[in-house]
Image (cartoon, helix red, strand yellow):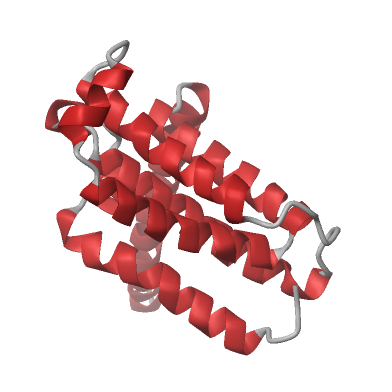
Length: 196
């Protein structure tokens, strides 16, 4: 008569163990999130800020402008790669060589953007293409961040947050970061033809 309650109690133990484990992981995740929000890693906070700024800029200026900026990133990197650094970097003697390389690349990108990019906005985009702007903004900023982190010394890269190092400082992802933007542009151009 007393065997059934004992058997039922034993059957509840695995379920209680799963709940306890899930509660433990939730508590750890909550503690980590609270610690990050109270003292975020500077590099992750900067990347998130760039993503947000790029997304809102894309909403105001339109999908085509973001696509243009992606192509300008490729061109800027190609031009930077063939420039004689030994003759140009001394112009940036007020900063160290790594910062000088970053400034030179961003200067080339800015010149291309303002000289070749359209200056007139098409107005806020339609709701139907917001997701495309989000994807393009993520790809554009991620591509720029990957290139810029590649200019940093190894000592500085080692101080970055694990997430930043894994996504933006992993040599294994170099090919993907250079191929992915153009693949996304091709896909969205065909998917959203006629939209902006």
